[in-house]
Image 1 (cartoon, rainbow, N blue to C red):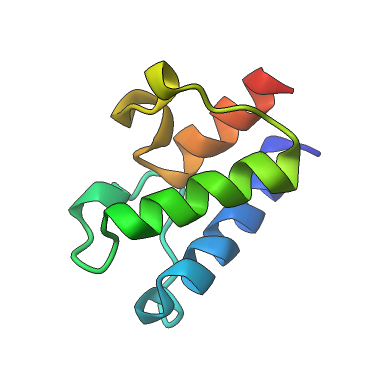
Image 2 (cartoon, helix red, strand yellow):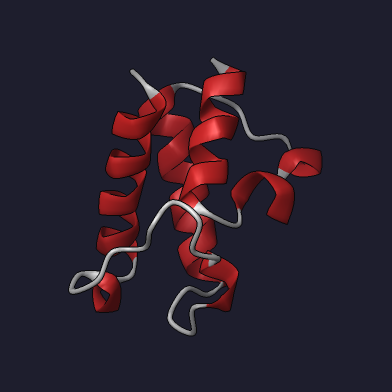
Length: 82
């Protein structure tokens, strides 16, 4: 899967986790941590989905804004872990 497709797929899932974003899904560089409806439970749900959907492991030390604060960073992280 290429990065662009991965970004689109992750952004779609963000709208499942946070339905309030369905009208305007986040772009690849939108900081999810600054979105009021995107809380720690949403992040946890998204992490579990990333691991299950892409068959990757997200070790505790990798859970950081550098890897997971935007859809684009999540896509890059998934690609590095595969």
